[in-house]
Structures are given as C-alpha cells and as structure tokens.
Image 1 (spheres, helix red, strand yellow):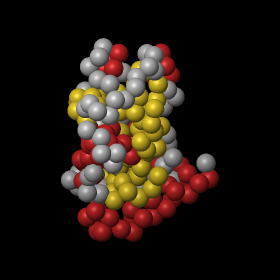
Image 2 (cartoon, rainbow, N blue to C red; image 1 turned 60 degrees about the vertical axis):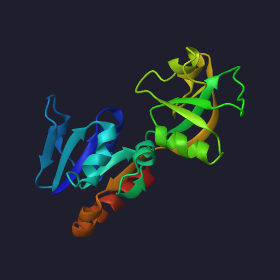
Image 3 (cartoon, helix red, strand yellow; image 1 turned 30 degrees about the horizontal axis):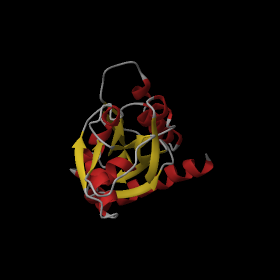
Length: 208
C-alpha cells in the first residue's frame, strides 16, 4: 500500500485528478463526507488530506510514502526527502513587493514581512543585505501599508491583490509549482511501486 499525502484545497483536488488518470483512482474520495483517509486496496493506494504546509512533515517522517507539496514549502523547510517530479500545477512565484513609491536605502536595515523567513534570509544574504525579519502568518500586504515593514516576501499569482493595495512586485525570487515528493526510506523499500507511479504521473503531465 502506497500512502499518499494530498494538500487540502484546489491543488490537492487537481493532484488527485492526475493520480486518478494515472490509474490510482479511489472513488470514495469524491463522496461528500468528512473523512480524511481513503483507500483502494485493489489499486494499492491510501490517500489522506492534510494542511498543505504539513505534507512534507508527513512525508519526511514516513507517515506518507509520497505527497504533493509546493516548491515554496520545500525551499522554506528544506525537508530531507526526494523531489521526484514537477507537476506544473499551482504555478506562481515568490516575490519581493513594496509600496510603489518605496526607495531602498541600503544604509539602513531593510524590514521584511513574510511567512517565509528562510527564503527571505537566503535571498537577501546573497545580496549581503542587512534585514530585519518580521514573521507574519496572514494578510502580509498590510505590513508595508501600515508602516510595519518596508517590503514583503510572499507568493504572487496574478499580482491583483498587490495592485488593489497599492503595492507592486519588485523582484522575483523563484518560480513556484507543485512537486511530487517521496520519503527516502519508502523510495528504497517501495522503489518499484513509487517509480511506476511517478512515471505514469509524469506521462499524464506531458500529455496534458
């Protein structure tokens, strides 16, 4: 049985659709219920829904053999897992954004509000820029508007939210998309099953 951690929400539903096309369907998962675990013994798969940021924890610690996680989560937490494939879904970018009239004075410490402190630190370390990280969990756009920060580092999809709040993206840090990831021990002991599954999924993605 391959245990698969799916992120709750649209991304997880899109990911499940790919697994289904690849021959790993589990009809029960589409039923209206509050269950979190679904399995199809005939196909040898067990799916479970988890919070998107928790997928890598389940995979790293072996509760899940494989999972679907955004590249942002992989970069932020650097889990000790294998990245098997880019699913090309949930495309967006990690970017620096600020008020349109902001000018960066490099003589002073840059205040950076973000949910992704490690990504922000890594980005600015490469520029030898001194920063003060302000770790927020939601409504990051408010920080520069209210003077809490100079810039934000956050995920940008269309940029519409930024524009509506008189902010603009300045620098793209890295493109983001969903990745198929695997537990290292599972990949060793269930190698044949996981590789077959990964190859089928990659074929589905290539065929569109």
